[in-house]
Image 1 (cartoon, rainbow over the protein chains, first blue to last red):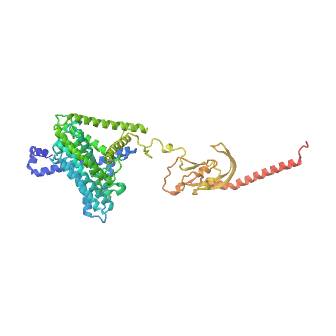
Image 2 (cartoon, rainbow over the protein chains, first blue to last red):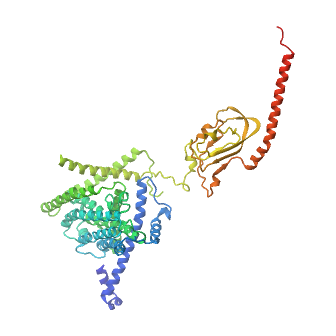
Image 3 (cartoon, rainbow over the protein chains, first blue to last red):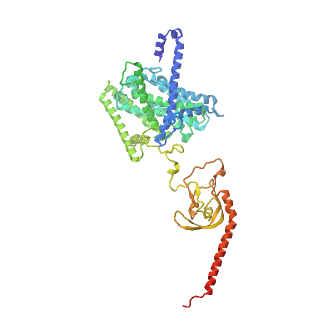
Length: 395
Length: 197
């Protein structure tokens, strides 16, 4: 967006007369506002969509009363929570307690800086993009630990400590699973990684070779753990810790935690799309720049939505893991496998410096095969149940 | 073997997550079982209930013989009956077609439905199936007194109580007349001894 502002300054006399810094500041604030609006709308609407999906997965309906088909439920819930009193426990550490939600929110929101929406729509294409994302998302753990500590409540402290242990451990396989992609792309910038891929599935990094295929799953699992999503939501395990680190929060501060949790879904989906699924790469190229970017935006959103849907489905499929199981999965399974992957990709790149196209086609075929088996299993389960089919999502 | 166990774990985790996700996805395509009571139901909920559903009690006052069997059967004493004598009539139990003499009728028949626990013992005790469970279940109210079901209206109750002495007198008269008739018949029997044959 820096280039966009520079070209604006070049073109308009009025902006030229102003100091450059001011124009950049105001421009960036406007962009931040746009992204914040997007993130708020996304977080709100996702909370509604998730509840509807969860309902259908449990043979329930979900919220369908507020607005058309319950679509305004998220707004009603948000406004209601917003109006509640902001209670601070008497024994709490007031300053830290008040400050913690902002850190969590900042950690989640800052990652939007390098998340692209199309080949031009990006706040800033940092050349350390991925490292920047890992850095700011681990900022969240500071906020969660701060919230847990400042609440002066045993459950909250447990939640905060668990979150710290979880995020710190999972950062190792996360980084190791991201390295193969960085090797292949030769860059850390998010736009650079997308440009290294193509529009077709066999050009995506997920199907590049068997090692990146495994890296996809390792990275996805670590992202789930980083985002405190089920089945790794032990920091706020309802059945054990009441609500974990946010037990004592109410009102707007409580809302901020949930805002970050649901907004994080987009961040997760976008990172997966950027690194493994070809980002905004589209097969269509038009002379009209607006149309091209719109198509790219749609493709990016569609891919991200698929990942978000799988994340939601996983939450309502799997039970929560225990703390020791969580550590087992990380240290005994993910870390060794991500090391193997790393060496595998390195050797692969030595043997096939320009890639090996037949393997990509084969891996794509494997992906299609897995999808086919999945669809077959779904049909089998439906037939076994002898139930009425109701495909329409609205009821 | 430990290594075998290690890889088995991975296979189990992968396949079970895959299978679990196929099941949850198949649920997405199923019809929800939720009944959106009360305003978005296809037909009234009363019609969806099973035939022997134990809802709020109802009494057919014409069938009731005021035998107080239900009152005695009730474990929490929520039925209150005052019986009065009435002119003898015969009723036919609809379910069995049995003919039953009715010489008493309830002057007061109150059921405190707030206390009722819907055990169904009163309906089992009733010999004429006058007291019955209905599929009705919506009776929420803001006053506890509204939950006392009064099956005999007060004016009817007073009328029955006022008429009772007359009914008794009539019954006694009829009894006396019957007794006199029987005595007369006996006397006539004595007067004319049986034929010598």
